Length: 160
Image 1 (cartoon, rainbow, N blue to C red):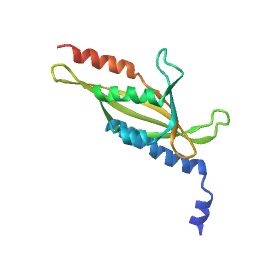
Image 2 (cartoon, rainbow, N blue to C red):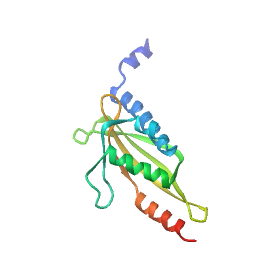
Image 3 (cartoon, rainbow, N blue to C red):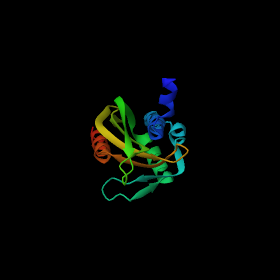
Image 4 (cartoon, rainbow, N blue to C red):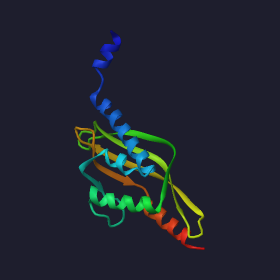
């Protein structure tokens, strides 16, 4: 009886967060595996990304991100190092949990040089995801210094 009472009083935002965090985990793993089918299955057709780099546009469409990710997957390899960490996001106005997910993990990005040698860097990724009622990602932001990582790998792999 106590178990039924506890289940009946569960916070729906908490349950939504757990489900959405599982979705974010699948997205990270699909990106790592360069599995575009599994990756894009978690995003709404109308999903947008916030540009967080220098001079980036305010939002970037799913179509544009698809082209960018295909190019990155062709040039770089990705590996999640260690555990994925998820925290619940909050509504910026109410400061209450809203089912959004903030994920953080250590990422290894690598690239083969002209000589065949593998060059790699590691950096922390912090990413936030907002979801629609169907549990699809509709908005995401990536905070990391990926541009420097890519530049460093390109420089390192172009020198003999």
